[in-house]
Image (tube, rainbow, N blue to C red; front, side, top):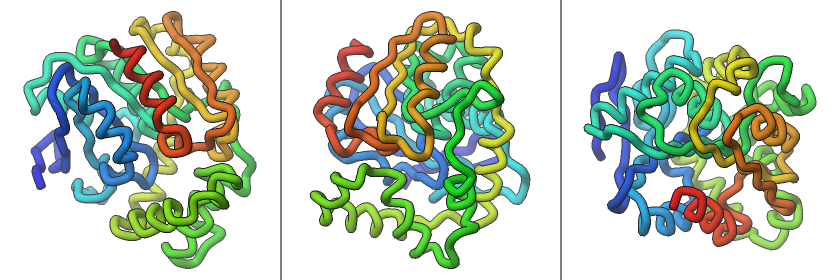
Length: 264
């Protein structure tokens, strides 16, 4: 399992496929394992896919310091450089989309095209979920990691999808339990998300950008995608009617095709 030294941490990463690089940045509490296998399999036929664990998550180091989105963008830029990649497409999901925004704003020379999935720009321009949702994310409504995972599923997937795909949902729960996020790391990541604000800087993003969002997203309301697409000069917006926060599982063929068509 490869790791590479970047800044003050060792980052766990994986490479799949060949072609022009596509760096994929996972969201809060997630690891490289959380990407849909169908997504990775489909995209790796066209691109060299780089997935990794953010600082504080999975097999990457978890320094005992406060985290910021800028810090994690620096990590991503450092990983790209350490892998001798001159330029890459960048896709970010949820918190990973915030990291991707910070990356393209601070290291535009490293980004070819940008894909923002289920994310927001932070600050007063963003549309936030109810307080109960943020309390859940912070672990205030659950006592154990197992209980947290159990209650997270309705936030990630529409009710009908959960009902019709019990084996998939059980598999996701088991996957999450394999790589639990330490409480301190989760708290630090949540604080980093809370401090993030790219709203006034969105107009400085000049890269061709695809904004993807599920209209049934309970963690990050889809109106955030409309805000991003309106304020990023070269942005295209695609909304999916029957998808929640996990964009890549309910209708994988449709989402994969949208991504490939944009990057090609």
